[in-house]
Length: 110
Image (tube, rainbow, N blue to C red; front, side, top):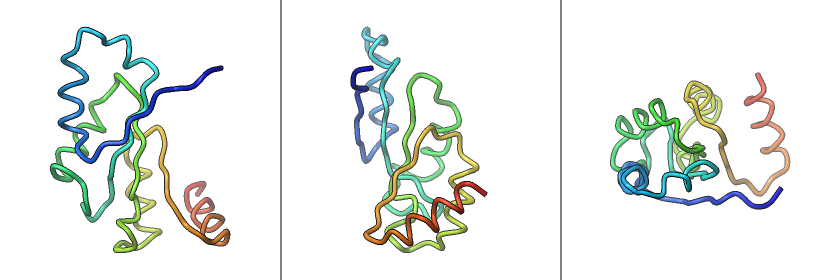
């Protein structure tokens, strides 16, 4: 099976410019790029509209959204509804309570 390469970035637009203008495009096949994306646009760089456009147009590598709840600034059910509309391959969220994991997973499955 092996490992898949992953990159975390705060500016997926800038990273994408570097990735697609390389002569090593074979590296993109298994790559997972993780970045902030949330309905509120909190810590989404350079801005929410550009990142949404990148998500909708990308076919070269896998996309993982993080900070999807805007560090607590957003309504969780509304945030999940927003994220489910985007063609992301993965999402990641953090919590210290099992009840929150269970609740969020139920919302993702519905």
